[in-house]
Amino acid sequence: EAVDIAELIAGKKVAIFAVPGAFTPGCSKSHLPSFITAQEELKAKGVELTICIATNDAFVMEAWGRTSGGADAGIRFLSDGNAELSKALGLLIESPVMVRTKRFSLIADDGVVTHYFPAMEASDTWAPNVLAKL
Image 1 (cartoon, helix red, strand yellow):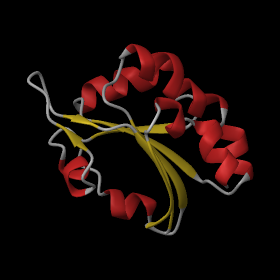
Image 2 (tube, helix red, strand yellow):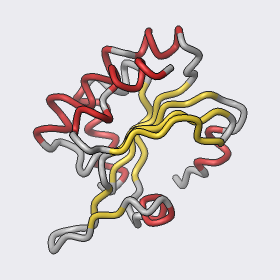
Image 3 (cartoon, one colour):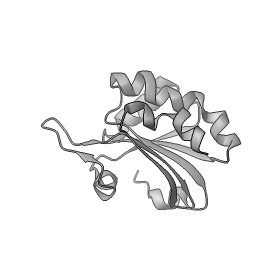
């Protein structure tokens, strides 16, 4: 089912992070777990919803959320399968295999980005860096 991200985040303070691919080593071993373990701290700082985005299809994102424990931790996994959001944000990685999203994190309050974390180093986008700025 299609999700309107503007509707989903309206009136909420949210953390959104994007990864190049579900089930990839760095994303599965570091990036995602950093947000899983940070859920209580993020909530304590007013974050009502955490969203993970990748260009994998919705079935892959659902499976990654379920098998990683991320969905159980309260993280919402969304597919940017057509890379519409990634393109709109200027964060697209063209690849001969598939289009991917550049790694990033952000905090938005009622749809307005208040903090943006680009990936100069992968860890720049992990939850501890996000928490340090809130």
